[in-house]
Amino acid sequence: MTLIKSISGIRGTIGGAPGDALTPVDIVKFVYAYCVKLRERRPKPDGERYRVVVGKDARISGEMVEQVVCGTLLACGVDVVKAGYASTPTTEMAVIFEKADGGIILTASHNPKQWNALKLLNEKGEFLNAEEGAAILACAEDEGFDFCDVDSVGHMTEKDFTDMHIDAVLALDAVDADAVRKAGFKVALDAVNSVGGIIMPRLFERLGVECVEVNCTPDGQFAHNPEPLPANLTELCDAVVRHKADLGVSVDPDVDRLALICETGQPFGEEYTLVSVADYLLSRAVRMAESEGRSVDEVIAPYSLATVSNLSSSRALRDVTESYGGKYFSAAVGEVNVTTRMRECGALIGGEGNGGVIYPALHYGRDAIVGTALFLTSLAYRKCTVSGLLKTYPQYFITKNRIELSDKSMIDRILDEMKRLYASEDVNDVDGVKISFESRKEWVHLRKSNTEPIIRIYAESSTEESAVKLAQEIKSIADRIIAGK
Image (tube, rainbow, N blue to C red):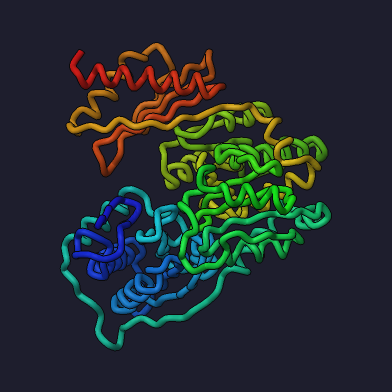
């Protein structure tokens, strides 16, 4: 059994003893702490009630977790808007629609079915920052419960926000539903038997896209490892070819990550989901500025011709951004870090290389629904195949490795030594150590785990062979440091 507590929430396996797994006891403690800090963060006059939106993915444990979460909120005197089966971005949008004080998302994202988690939102429908998350964790350990009296118990309403979310996506200027309809696309969809099987077919129907459904029954029985990686998408790849689809679309259980499959049945590459959407939005901004005789900044205000991704994401986004005269910015790994950086630089688009697209014109959160709509719009305008589109982008290869340590104190020593050894290169230590070899257009990123004595090594180069070689070079140096040589 496992229970992991972090500043972004708590996650764990279902069943077992409190403190060792995600049990009702742990859920009550955590939700109670959320309510305490909610009141501190957003003071209200006496008698004015708080409201929190609760949404869940289709995990088997979802109903149990939902009832405990909602019951605890009600016992704390908080009104609940129960969104039921809802993607993570839908729940985030629901907080905005309802003008609620916060939200709780019940999903363990791409983790296996025995896992579940609570992810906490603020009044903007965005994840709490590190300081807020740490305060809730500390409060949850206090166990000084003081629930409300009978006259102050919260009230619960139920509401489906799926169509409202789709409406908001289709209302975006950058989404051209008519162009997508005229293109007559056929798409194979793998929703890994979670809530993507509800919202994605509805989106495709509204866009006039023929949808071949693969694993779209939202019963939480994941047909394969739910992380949308190529090794887990062989069934979808086969379906694309068998049904002669224009592309394949895969989403994770809570629909905040988007992976695409070319019409050939080959993966588009999760790193290139964000790259392709950014390419479309950047080119659109430049074309609009030229046709209207205005500056790009005027055309896309309040945003700028800038993009953001995390430090472990492909250089391809930077290359594409700079090809349009835009500016690329990096951020520490983690959605809240990316969105913070996006706000700072006014980025038009941002996200993470794992297929997470963040389009602030809709909301500051990873959203596979808007990512899909923007990608299909781009494809309709370009009148090309998905594989043809992929060929237009600079090709890079990323390898992922790890160093497991018996002595956790070695982690900082290794990172510090890497900074010293590669001081002549471009070194970023915002999140671990990232070393960029600009002349070779290569980089390597070393990140320490928050929960395990592990250093993760990400390396990217123009060929898979050179990426592997770079990672091995770094790993060999780390081994020598560990050995004291």
